[in-house]
Length: 483
Image (tube, rainbow, N blue to C red; front, top):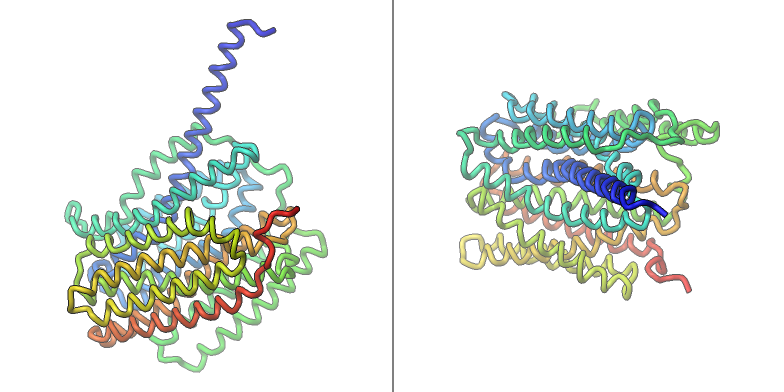
């Protein structure tokens, strides 16, 4: 039997371990929130930033696309680096780089410098992000991870709301006369605090089964995806020269080479960026296709709506930010309440239901634009934005579970990383296509903001209808408990 002194010492040690675990969750939560906020906070700041740096619409596209593309294409490599060199080391290295890149963004003297620093932010986010789940797995046994992941879900939703509001407040109150720059500079003190805590509380561990990095696969993915995005962003401003059409062909060729490389490396027992067998699962392929299309539509819609409210309807940055609250509340309601109840009854049919809700939302937003000079405009836009959030929760929240319903446990980590890559790359494509379309149309004729937005809403609707059709390829019984 343990003595009272030994029992007291054990309690003190247990309390200290629990305190360290709590602070560790705080640290990785800070990193996750920074990643989310640094996308949403910028939507509201675009008009002021564009005017201050004399940035073209093409350059604004790269500000978003550069971050999202490099974040997406390096996610799997970032996870592998954490396995090899230690999760704390990669997390802290990525966090430090993110802080340096944020300072570079805030001090940018040209649009090109801002683009370069945003790309660095994307790279650092890809190094930092995968370590979050790895550290949670190290710190918590399986039965305790659900509570931690629930906290992440709440914080992620809150960050999505906080980003536009914070950005709007920063622009509105022009802190220290710095205009849009504190949107990025605010990250620096947060990063410093997180680094100090990370050094003290995060465990210095790595995977005992770490495999080497697939450098060739990573380079093929970067060059192949980059060639496609370069075509989409640059071709209109270059007036479609003959050589620009060679880039999509190059992208397709590199994609084929990438696929062959993955198969050869896997057969040889080497480390591949991801096991190609994952893409033999038709449910997973359907799910990742839907999430790519959905993020393409949603990312461009959120950017265009912020620009419509400010540049078209002349709302202040703060009022524009507050208009995002119905969207966040609608998403929170559909994920936490409606989605949980409906998915058990509807199964994969929840996706077309979410699509129907979101198409109705687009119709309300279109009506808000049509009645832009009346008292009905903002209520219509606000209710449409709220309903759009409801549709988003119904479509996107259950999608990972459907997509990975038949993925073997041995490939669950790689499939999860690849699914997240699809989400981020879809957002990058959205900024390069529909977002670029809206920016180009309004740059040529600013007064045509309403017709450009209507066209974007129509294209969003067509993408949503395609998603509803594709949802027939999701598993029909993944929501049912086995008997």
